[in-house]
Image 1 (cartoon, each protein chain N blue to C red):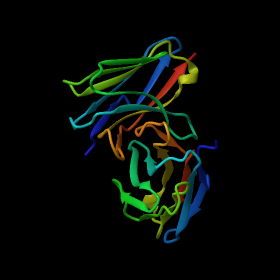
Image 2: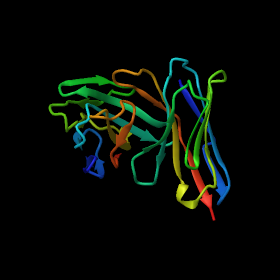
Image 3: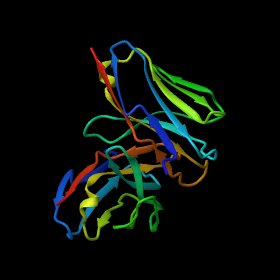
Image 4: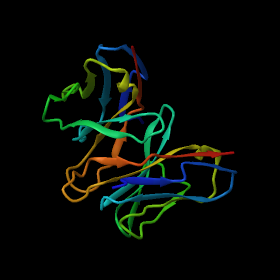
Length: 115
Length: 114
C-alpha cells in the first residue's frame, strides 16, 4: 500500500492565483482530513470528510474548498491564494476495516508559498 | 484559545538520558490523548496513545503518564537516542464514535546529542 499520497510536494503561487492540492489514500479509510502546519501553532484542521459526498468545516476553513467524490480522493482547493496561506499542508486518513477511528495516517505534506 | 498547551518548545538531551514533554488540557470532555512523532520533511505518525481511565501506558522506551485530576499528561522517552530527534506533538480528541476532531499542541522539537 502507498498509504496517503499528496501532490505536489512544493508549490509557489502568486497572490490571487488558485490551485488544487491533491490527496489520495489506498487504505479504504472512511475519514479524510486536511490540516495546515505553521511554526509554533501545531496542526490546525481545515476541512474533513466522513465519506464520499460528505464534508464539513474544521477550525480554519476560510479560503479553502473541498469535495469528496470518491473514497480515495480528497482534494483541497485554494480559491484565491493569500500570503497568509503560506504553510505546510497535510492530508490524513483514518478508520478503515479493522482499524481504529482515532488513528490518523498522514501524507508527506505539501509546502506552499504564496508571494 | 489554545486548548492543549505543550512545553517545552525545544529540548536538548544527551544520548541515554530521559526526554520529558508535558501537555495540559482544558476540556474535560477529551477522552483520547495521542502523541505524534514527526521527522523533518515527513508527515506526523502516531507514536503512542492513552485513554483517561489509565494513568500510564508504556510501549518500549516511550511512556505516557496521565493525571486526570490535574488535566495533564506527559511523554517520557527513556534511554533517548539520536534517532529520536524529531518534533513531538501531543493531542486530544473527543468521542468514541464518529469522526474525532483532534486538537494538537504546538509541538516540541527534540534533539538528542551523542
